[in-house]
Length: 370
Image (tube, one colour):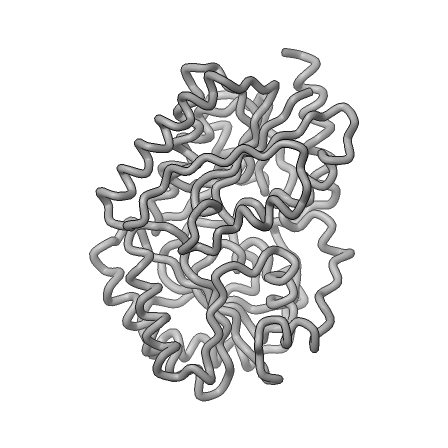
Protein backbone atom coordinates (compact mmCIF):
# COMPACT_ATOMS: atom_id res chain seq x y z
CA UNK A 1 0.00 0.00 0.00
CA UNK A 2 1.47 3.33 -1.07
CA UNK A 3 0.81 6.19 1.36
CA UNK A 4 1.71 9.85 1.02
CA UNK A 5 2.00 12.27 3.96
CA UNK A 6 1.31 15.95 3.27
CA UNK A 7 3.23 18.13 5.73
CA UNK A 8 3.41 21.91 5.38
CA UNK A 9 4.74 23.09 8.75
CA UNK A 10 6.65 22.23 11.92
CA UNK A 11 3.29 21.96 13.71
CA UNK A 12 1.67 19.24 11.61
CA UNK A 13 4.92 17.29 11.26
CA UNK A 14 5.24 17.08 15.04
CA UNK A 15 1.70 15.76 15.30
CA UNK A 16 2.31 13.15 12.58
CA UNK A 17 5.44 11.69 14.23
CA UNK A 18 3.84 8.82 16.22
CA UNK A 19 2.10 7.65 13.03
CA UNK A 20 5.18 8.09 10.86
CA UNK A 21 7.33 6.04 13.19
CA UNK A 22 4.92 3.11 12.92
CA UNK A 23 4.37 3.44 9.17
CA UNK A 24 8.14 3.36 8.56
CA UNK A 25 8.34 -0.04 10.25
CA UNK A 26 5.30 -1.56 8.50
CA UNK A 27 6.38 -3.87 5.66
CA UNK A 28 2.94 -3.50 4.03
CA UNK A 29 3.37 0.26 3.64
CA UNK A 30 5.37 2.20 1.05
CA UNK A 31 5.72 5.60 2.69
CA UNK A 32 6.48 8.91 0.96
CA UNK A 33 6.74 12.34 2.58
CA UNK A 34 5.43 15.35 0.64
CA UNK A 35 6.98 18.43 2.27
CA UNK A 36 6.00 21.99 1.31
CA UNK A 37 4.92 25.27 2.89
CA UNK A 38 7.10 26.71 5.66
CA UNK A 39 9.28 23.57 5.71
CA UNK A 40 11.09 25.13 2.74
CA UNK A 41 11.19 28.67 4.19
CA UNK A 42 14.48 29.85 5.66
CA UNK A 43 12.69 32.64 7.53
CA UNK A 44 10.63 29.99 9.36
CA UNK A 45 13.52 27.74 10.35
CA UNK A 46 13.89 25.67 7.14
CA UNK A 47 12.40 22.69 8.99
CA UNK A 48 12.84 20.35 6.02
CA UNK A 49 16.20 19.65 7.70
CA UNK A 50 14.38 17.90 10.56
CA UNK A 51 12.47 15.72 8.10
CA UNK A 52 15.63 14.78 6.20
CA UNK A 53 17.25 13.64 9.46
CA UNK A 54 14.60 10.95 9.87
CA UNK A 55 15.83 9.00 6.83
CA UNK A 56 12.58 8.39 4.95
CA UNK A 57 13.07 6.47 1.73
CA UNK A 58 11.30 9.14 -0.35
CA UNK A 59 10.86 12.84 0.45
CA UNK A 60 9.30 15.19 -2.11
CA UNK A 61 10.01 18.91 -1.68
CA UNK A 62 7.62 21.44 -3.21
CA UNK A 63 8.34 25.17 -2.86
CA UNK A 64 5.37 27.51 -3.34
CA UNK A 65 5.31 30.20 -0.63
CA UNK A 66 6.19 33.82 -1.29
CA UNK A 67 7.97 35.65 1.52
CA UNK A 68 5.43 38.43 2.18
CA UNK A 69 2.45 37.82 4.49
CA UNK A 70 -0.07 40.32 3.12
CA UNK A 71 -3.50 39.10 2.01
CA UNK A 72 -2.43 39.37 -1.65
CA UNK A 73 0.72 37.35 -1.01
CA UNK A 74 -1.22 34.64 0.82
CA UNK A 75 -3.51 34.34 -2.20
CA UNK A 76 -0.48 34.23 -4.51
CA UNK A 77 1.04 31.44 -2.40
CA UNK A 78 -2.29 29.61 -2.48
CA UNK A 79 -2.41 29.80 -6.26
CA UNK A 80 1.23 28.72 -6.66
CA UNK A 81 0.61 25.75 -4.36
CA UNK A 82 -2.34 24.64 -6.48
CA UNK A 83 -0.28 24.94 -9.67
CA UNK A 84 2.67 23.01 -8.23
CA UNK A 85 0.44 20.26 -6.88
CA UNK A 86 -1.57 19.93 -10.08
CA UNK A 87 1.66 18.76 -11.71
CA UNK A 88 2.61 16.66 -8.68
CA UNK A 89 -0.71 14.77 -8.52
CA UNK A 90 -0.53 14.10 -12.25
CA UNK A 91 2.89 12.47 -11.85
CA UNK A 92 2.49 10.66 -8.51
CA UNK A 93 -0.22 8.18 -7.53
CA UNK A 94 -1.05 6.90 -4.04
CA UNK A 95 -3.54 4.54 -2.46
CA UNK A 96 -4.08 7.14 0.26
CA UNK A 97 -2.67 10.56 1.21
CA UNK A 98 -2.77 11.87 4.77
CA UNK A 99 -3.50 15.54 5.40
CA UNK A 100 -3.79 17.35 8.71
CA UNK A 101 -5.44 20.39 10.14
CA UNK A 102 -6.36 23.67 8.57
CA UNK A 103 -3.48 25.58 6.97
CA UNK A 104 -4.21 27.51 3.76
CA UNK A 105 -1.36 25.81 1.89
CA UNK A 106 -2.59 22.38 3.03
CA UNK A 107 -6.02 23.19 1.67
CA UNK A 108 -4.52 24.36 -1.65
CA UNK A 109 -2.64 21.06 -2.08
CA UNK A 110 -5.83 19.10 -1.43
CA UNK A 111 -8.04 21.18 -3.71
CA UNK A 112 -5.53 20.52 -6.50
CA UNK A 113 -5.96 16.79 -5.90
CA UNK A 114 -9.74 16.72 -6.39
CA UNK A 115 -9.72 16.46 -10.23
CA UNK A 116 -7.10 13.69 -9.96
CA UNK A 117 -9.38 11.75 -7.56
CA UNK A 118 -6.69 11.62 -4.87
CA UNK A 119 -7.98 9.80 -1.78
CA UNK A 120 -7.30 11.87 1.33
CA UNK A 121 -7.37 10.88 5.01
CA UNK A 122 -7.92 13.96 7.17
CA UNK A 123 -6.70 14.32 10.76
CA UNK A 124 -8.20 16.88 13.18
CA UNK A 125 -11.30 17.62 11.13
CA UNK A 126 -14.52 18.94 12.63
CA UNK A 127 -12.84 21.41 14.99
CA UNK A 128 -13.55 25.13 15.20
CA UNK A 129 -11.21 28.11 15.46
CA UNK A 130 -13.52 31.08 15.24
CA UNK A 131 -10.71 33.65 15.36
CA UNK A 132 -8.88 32.21 12.36
CA UNK A 133 -9.80 31.87 8.71
CA UNK A 134 -8.35 28.36 9.03
CA UNK A 135 -11.86 27.33 10.08
CA UNK A 136 -12.92 27.63 6.42
CA UNK A 137 -9.88 25.74 5.14
CA UNK A 138 -10.39 22.91 7.64
CA UNK A 139 -13.98 22.30 6.60
CA UNK A 140 -13.04 22.41 2.90
CA UNK A 141 -10.40 19.77 3.55
CA UNK A 142 -13.00 17.64 5.34
CA UNK A 143 -15.38 17.76 2.38
CA UNK A 144 -12.56 16.81 -0.02
CA UNK A 145 -11.45 13.81 2.08
CA UNK A 146 -12.59 10.18 2.10
CA UNK A 147 -11.35 9.09 5.54
CA UNK A 148 -11.72 11.14 8.72
CA UNK A 149 -9.81 10.72 11.99
CA UNK A 150 -11.06 13.16 14.63
CA UNK A 151 -9.81 13.98 18.12
CA UNK A 152 -13.16 13.81 19.95
CA UNK A 153 -16.75 12.67 19.45
CA UNK A 154 -18.05 16.23 19.13
CA UNK A 155 -15.72 16.75 16.15
CA UNK A 156 -16.89 13.52 14.52
CA UNK A 157 -20.44 14.85 14.80
CA UNK A 158 -19.39 18.01 12.95
CA UNK A 159 -17.66 16.00 10.20
CA UNK A 160 -20.78 13.84 9.78
CA UNK A 161 -22.85 17.01 9.48
CA UNK A 162 -20.49 18.37 6.81
CA UNK A 163 -20.24 15.23 4.65
CA UNK A 164 -23.75 13.89 5.26
CA UNK A 165 -22.75 10.40 6.42
CA UNK A 166 -21.07 8.66 9.35
CA UNK A 167 -19.26 6.27 7.01
CA UNK A 168 -15.46 6.40 7.34
CA UNK A 169 -15.56 8.83 10.29
CA UNK A 170 -13.56 7.66 13.33
CA UNK A 171 -12.87 9.24 16.72
CA UNK A 172 -9.28 8.30 17.57
CA UNK A 173 -8.02 11.14 19.80
CA UNK A 174 -5.19 13.57 19.09
CA UNK A 175 -2.31 11.83 17.33
CA UNK A 176 0.30 14.10 18.92
CA UNK A 177 -0.52 12.57 22.32
CA UNK A 178 0.01 9.00 21.18
CA UNK A 179 2.58 7.42 23.50
CA UNK A 180 2.68 10.50 25.75
CA UNK A 181 2.72 8.24 28.81
CA UNK A 182 6.23 7.06 27.87
CA UNK A 183 7.60 10.52 27.03
CA UNK A 184 10.81 11.47 28.82
CA UNK A 185 12.01 15.08 28.59
CA UNK A 186 15.57 15.93 27.72
CA UNK A 187 17.63 16.13 30.91
CA UNK A 188 17.09 19.61 32.33
CA UNK A 189 20.70 20.86 32.34
CA UNK A 190 21.20 19.57 28.79
CA UNK A 191 18.00 21.25 27.59
CA UNK A 192 18.84 24.59 29.22
CA UNK A 193 22.35 24.53 27.81
CA UNK A 194 21.17 23.56 24.32
CA UNK A 195 18.96 26.66 24.05
CA UNK A 196 21.14 29.04 26.09
CA UNK A 197 18.59 29.31 28.87
CA UNK A 198 19.71 30.68 32.23
CA UNK A 199 18.90 28.47 35.20
CA UNK A 200 15.57 30.15 35.88
CA UNK A 201 11.84 29.47 35.65
CA UNK A 202 10.20 30.43 32.37
CA UNK A 203 6.88 30.83 30.59
CA UNK A 204 6.50 29.18 27.18
CA UNK A 205 4.77 31.63 24.84
CA UNK A 206 3.48 31.38 21.27
CA UNK A 207 1.46 34.07 19.53
CA UNK A 208 -0.06 34.04 16.04
CA UNK A 209 -2.25 36.65 14.32
CA UNK A 210 -6.02 36.41 14.29
CA UNK A 211 -6.80 35.99 10.61
CA UNK A 212 -10.50 36.85 10.90
CA UNK A 213 -10.11 40.19 12.71
CA UNK A 214 -7.09 41.24 10.63
CA UNK A 215 -7.37 44.97 11.30
CA UNK A 216 -6.91 44.44 15.05
CA UNK A 217 -3.61 42.58 14.80
CA UNK A 218 -1.42 45.66 15.11
CA UNK A 219 -3.10 46.52 18.41
CA UNK A 220 -3.06 42.86 19.54
CA UNK A 221 0.67 42.58 18.88
CA UNK A 222 1.39 45.78 20.79
CA UNK A 223 -0.69 44.60 23.77
CA UNK A 224 1.20 41.30 23.66
CA UNK A 225 4.56 43.09 23.78
CA UNK A 226 3.49 45.34 26.66
CA UNK A 227 2.14 42.38 28.64
CA UNK A 228 5.24 40.26 28.05
CA UNK A 229 7.45 43.17 29.13
CA UNK A 230 5.65 43.36 32.47
CA UNK A 231 5.53 39.58 32.94
CA UNK A 232 9.27 39.32 32.23
CA UNK A 233 10.01 41.14 35.50
CA UNK A 234 8.99 37.92 37.26
CA UNK A 235 9.92 35.14 34.83
CA UNK A 236 11.99 34.41 31.76
CA UNK A 237 9.91 34.10 28.58
CA UNK A 238 10.73 31.55 25.89
CA UNK A 239 8.90 32.47 22.68
CA UNK A 240 8.34 30.18 19.71
CA UNK A 241 8.02 32.41 16.64
CA UNK A 242 4.85 32.85 14.54
CA UNK A 243 3.98 30.73 11.49
CA UNK A 244 3.32 32.06 7.97
CA UNK A 245 -0.12 33.60 8.46
CA UNK A 246 -1.58 36.85 7.20
CA UNK A 247 0.21 39.64 9.15
CA UNK A 248 2.29 37.16 11.11
CA UNK A 249 5.19 39.58 10.66
CA UNK A 250 3.37 42.13 12.83
CA UNK A 251 3.73 39.79 15.82
CA UNK A 252 7.24 38.78 14.80
CA UNK A 253 8.34 42.43 14.69
CA UNK A 254 6.91 43.18 18.14
CA UNK A 255 8.60 40.09 19.59
CA UNK A 256 11.96 41.13 18.11
CA UNK A 257 11.46 44.67 19.45
CA UNK A 258 10.88 43.19 22.90
CA UNK A 259 13.96 41.01 22.54
CA UNK A 260 16.06 44.10 21.76
CA UNK A 261 14.67 45.91 24.82
CA UNK A 262 15.19 43.12 27.37
CA UNK A 263 17.52 40.56 25.74
CA UNK A 264 18.37 38.97 29.08
CA UNK A 265 14.71 38.01 29.68
CA UNK A 266 13.55 36.85 26.24
CA UNK A 267 14.59 33.74 24.32
CA UNK A 268 13.26 33.43 20.74
CA UNK A 269 13.09 30.00 19.11
CA UNK A 270 12.28 29.60 15.41
CA UNK A 271 11.78 25.84 15.59
CA UNK A 272 12.08 23.55 18.61
CA UNK A 273 11.15 20.23 17.06
CA UNK A 274 8.71 17.97 18.93
CA UNK A 275 11.09 16.43 21.49
CA UNK A 276 12.50 19.82 22.43
CA UNK A 277 9.08 21.50 22.44
CA UNK A 278 7.58 18.86 24.69
CA UNK A 279 10.62 19.20 26.96
CA UNK A 280 10.11 22.98 27.02
CA UNK A 281 6.47 22.43 27.95
CA UNK A 282 7.51 20.02 30.70
CA UNK A 283 9.96 22.50 32.28
CA UNK A 284 7.85 25.63 31.83
CA UNK A 285 5.69 27.18 34.55
CA UNK A 286 2.76 27.67 32.16
CA UNK A 287 1.86 28.29 28.51
CA UNK A 288 0.80 31.69 27.20
CA UNK A 289 -0.54 32.70 23.78
CA UNK A 290 -2.99 31.40 21.21
CA UNK A 291 -1.45 28.21 19.85
CA UNK A 292 -3.31 24.93 19.41
CA UNK A 293 -0.69 23.06 21.46
CA UNK A 294 -1.97 24.86 24.55
CA UNK A 295 -5.42 23.44 23.86
CA UNK A 296 -4.43 19.96 22.63
CA UNK A 297 -1.35 18.98 24.61
CA UNK A 298 -0.63 21.10 27.69
CA UNK A 299 -3.11 19.27 29.93
CA UNK A 300 -1.11 16.05 29.49
CA UNK A 301 1.93 17.86 30.96
CA UNK A 302 0.02 19.16 33.98
CA UNK A 303 0.32 22.75 32.74
CA UNK A 304 -2.13 25.61 32.90
CA UNK A 305 -2.61 27.67 29.76
CA UNK A 306 -3.46 31.33 29.37
CA UNK A 307 -5.26 31.30 26.02
CA UNK A 308 -5.39 34.79 24.53
CA UNK A 309 -7.99 36.13 22.11
CA UNK A 310 -10.26 34.28 19.71
CA UNK A 311 -7.87 32.28 17.50
CA UNK A 312 -8.67 29.04 19.36
CA UNK A 313 -12.22 30.00 20.27
CA UNK A 314 -14.65 27.18 19.54
CA UNK A 315 -12.21 24.36 20.30
CA UNK A 316 -13.03 21.83 22.98
CA UNK A 317 -11.02 22.73 26.11
CA UNK A 318 -9.78 20.83 29.14
CA UNK A 319 -10.06 22.42 32.60
CA UNK A 320 -6.49 23.77 32.48
CA UNK A 321 -7.31 26.63 30.08
CA UNK A 322 -7.77 30.21 31.30
CA UNK A 323 -9.20 32.42 28.55
CA UNK A 324 -8.44 36.12 28.30
CA UNK A 325 -8.51 39.02 25.86
CA UNK A 326 -5.68 40.68 23.90
CA UNK A 327 -5.40 43.36 26.56
CA UNK A 328 -2.26 43.97 28.60
CA UNK A 329 -3.73 44.08 32.11
CA UNK A 330 -6.06 41.14 31.51
CA UNK A 331 -3.19 39.01 30.19
CA UNK A 332 -1.04 39.89 33.20
CA UNK A 333 -3.91 39.12 35.59
CA UNK A 334 -4.56 35.75 33.91
CA UNK A 335 -0.86 34.82 34.12
CA UNK A 336 -0.80 35.68 37.83
CA UNK A 337 -3.91 33.55 38.33
CA UNK A 338 -2.30 30.60 36.54
CA UNK A 339 0.96 30.96 38.49
CA UNK A 340 -1.02 30.82 41.72
CA UNK A 341 -2.31 27.33 40.89
CA UNK A 342 -0.62 24.01 41.53
CA UNK A 343 0.08 21.56 38.69
CA UNK A 344 -3.02 20.63 36.72
CA UNK A 345 -4.21 17.13 37.66
CA UNK A 346 -7.29 16.82 35.45
CA UNK A 347 -7.91 14.90 32.24
CA UNK A 348 -6.98 15.88 28.69
CA UNK A 349 -10.19 15.69 26.64
CA UNK A 350 -8.10 14.97 23.50
CA UNK A 351 -6.29 11.94 24.93
CA UNK A 352 -7.10 8.39 23.76
CA UNK A 353 -4.77 5.39 23.86
CA UNK A 354 -3.32 3.67 20.80
CA UNK A 355 -4.24 6.39 18.30
CA UNK A 356 -1.58 5.59 15.67
CA UNK A 357 -2.27 1.85 15.74
CA UNK A 358 -6.01 2.44 15.36
CA UNK A 359 -5.42 4.69 12.35
CA UNK A 360 -3.20 2.12 10.62
CA UNK A 361 -5.68 -0.68 11.28
CA UNK A 362 -8.56 1.36 9.85
CA UNK A 363 -6.51 2.43 6.82
CA UNK A 364 -5.65 -1.16 5.94
CA UNK A 365 -9.28 -2.25 6.20
CA UNK A 366 -10.33 0.73 4.07
CA UNK A 367 -7.76 -0.13 1.42
CA UNK A 368 -9.18 -3.66 1.13
CA UNK A 369 -12.62 -2.25 0.26
CA UNK A 370 -11.63 0.17 -2.51
